[in-house]
Structures are given as C-alpha cells and as structure tokens.
Image 1: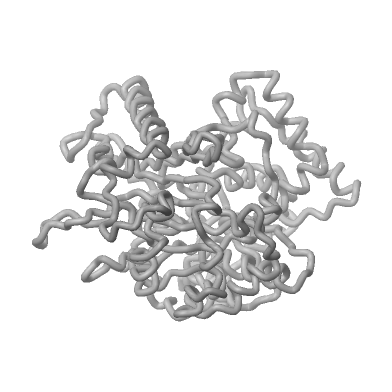
Image 2: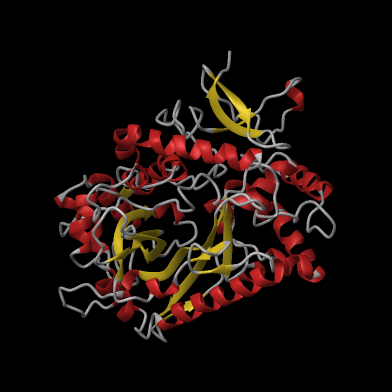
Length: 504
C-alpha cells in the first residue's frame, strides 16, 4: 500500500476509536441544527416521518413499506430507472478501462458491486437516521427559508441471527430534502429559526408549536442519494478503494415524479474539457469578480449548463492532487480550463475592485475550492466511510463506534457556522452565509472548535509551515495546529497534512 492510503487508513481507524470521547461535545455542537438522538429518531420513524408516510401522506398503515413496494410507486420509478442506468454505465466503464480486473456481486471479484437486489428487496427499507436543519442554505432557497433534510439509511428489516450474519445496515443513504417553509405559509424565517434554537431534544420537537410541526409532504423539494456502488479490497495491483454513486432527483409537482436533475455545483469535468466553447464560457463566468467572490465564500451557484446529473466519488483520495478528485485537470495540465495566470489575474482584479477574499488567495486555494464546492469533492473530505451523516443505528443491539458517532468531523465542524446563521435569521439580522474550506471550518466568534480534531487539535487538517514564512501559501498559512501538536504532511507533494503529537 502506498504512503497516503496507508496513512489515511491508520488515521481513520484511530479517529473512529477516538470520536465517541467527543459525544458530549457533539450534543452541544448540534443543538438547534440537527436531531441525532436514537430514541427520538425511533419514535419519529414510527410516526409521520417514516419515509412512506412522507411520500404518501394518505397512507395510514402501521407496517412500514418495504423497498420492493417503495420502488414501484409512480413517483419513485424514475429513481430506480436512473440508478439502474448508472450501474450499467459504471460496469461498462470498468470493463473498458480495467479489462483485467473482474467486477460483480460477491467476494470473488476484484471490484465487488453493491447487490442491487437488496435495494429493491421486500427485506429492506429506509430507516430515519437523522434530521438536519440547513437553513444556512437560505441564500440558495430564500423563499423556502433554506432546507430541512430527513436522512434515511438503507436497512434490512429482518436481520439474520448469529455472529456471522450480515450487518442490518447497508451502505446507502437517501436524503429527503424539504423546504423549511412550505409554499403559501405565512410563517417567517425568523419564527422557524427560533423554533429550532428554542427546542431541546424531547417533546417540544414534536409539539404543535415545535419545529417538526412545520414539516409535511408539501415541503418536499428533492431526493438525494449516496450509494456505495463498488468496493475494491487491497490487492497486488491496487490499494483499497471504494466508489460512491451520488444522484439528485427533483420533485416535479405537476407530473408527481422525482426527476433526475443536475447536481448543485457538480461541475461536469469530462464535458467541459472536451468542449472548448463551453470551457471558455465557464472560465469567463467563474472568474467574473461577482461570481469569484461567491466562489470564495462558498455560496456560488454554478449554472446548470456546466453541471453533471450524477457523480462517482472514489475514496480514499489522499492529500496529493489525483485524477480521483472531481476537478483534477481543470487548473493544470494540457487543455485545462484555467491557467495559473488566469487565476492570479482574476484574484487581483477582484481585490482591486473591493472584494475581500476570505479563503482563496492563490491558485492552490482556487483549485481546492473547485473540488470542495462539488458534491463529490465534499464527500471525499473527512467523511466516515464515504458519508458525512451515516446516523446512529437505533435498530442495532450493539452498535459499533462508527454508528455510535452519527456524523463525520466535517459535519460537526460546520455546526458553529450553521448555528450562527440560525441566530441571525431568528434575530432579523443579515446572516453571513460564507464558509471555509471543507477541511477547515470557520471558528466565527466561538471557541468551541479550538483544540478539537475538527479545527486544530489531534487529527485536524493543517498546512506544513515552511521557512521563510513569506513562502507559505496564502490560502492555507493559518491552518496551524494547537500547542503541543505539529503538522505532518500526508502526501508526497502536498503540504496539507494532519495535526499529531510532536515527535521527540
């Protein structure tokens, strides 16, 4: 195994073991922004937030709808068709690009495909794994006051007995994205934010004046899916690798179906690189000072003409530039969309025009933002096995560490920013929707993240400082480690690494 994947595997195992120690802190970090308590989620899944009741509010049956029936619903049939199409294309690409490596369902193959029959089985269903408040996305959905997300995990209904039985949870999440404010509602964004911030875990969440009382079928905007499509164990010819399929399906109220849609900011790299006209158009659009400022702040909304309808997010990708990253080659290499000179000139124009850049101060910062602004690039950053919110498995008798911790360091590191925005909305103040890089969250005015693995503590992402200091990249020079720790590079060329105890 090469240095970077081996380093990441060791760190991942250590982080999974260490994360439960932060359980009390995490409960504070997510207050008002997410519901992760397993007992609460079990109760909510038994009520109107069970996925079939959200999709079919008229359904009153007590027995949950199995996936064999769910995927025959007229509204969901296009979702199944699109996922099947992605599987067929994934297999065809593999056979064309890696003809000597076998692919199929089962341990006898080099690339082990997810068994699609489990997705459409009478023995599986989607179980509520978490509820996340994303009113910090009000900039993208102002009329709806941002979003509320119901996150469901694919789970076996009747798990087999015995120590060697397969785990009940399967590697797929389905995210039912809702508008925080339904169309026609007279409630204000301020009132919605206040309900979330005022409600502790417990009964008031479900009360008539609680935040969940505002959620119904009428709020549905889209479905987002994340499926571990294939896994390649370590072998003599490759390091271990896992590929995740990401898709988005927007709800068409007139047709009453979930239709395959472009993914927000998921730049279609192959199409861009193959079309010189589209390449020039995208370069001019993104380097415009107004769009560049939004790109820097993490609030950019790239036009759909430049976007893809699906993405494969391979993991792990390491810290060095790699063609596994979604935007690799857009800034460097033959036929790139941007040159370093383009980026330097655009940053200078923006600064001279009065734009105060918060994150991007160099071509390397521009390239990092190109990756983490995409769905796939963000999912490759500090996830737990390819997911940022796997949720606690409230159906398990003895959940493992990875399921006791409901979400990734990336998720928890963003909670301070989300709470700050909620408070501004509640108080009627202009929110600051900006965000840092996916690897390095914003502190805002809080000290909650200082010294933790989310920001500058053990395991946090950092930048190896060089001498003289003037030679350090302006986009990352403040990515330092807490006292007693040192930044250790995790790749062969990149100076991005992780904070560890100083060696003697």
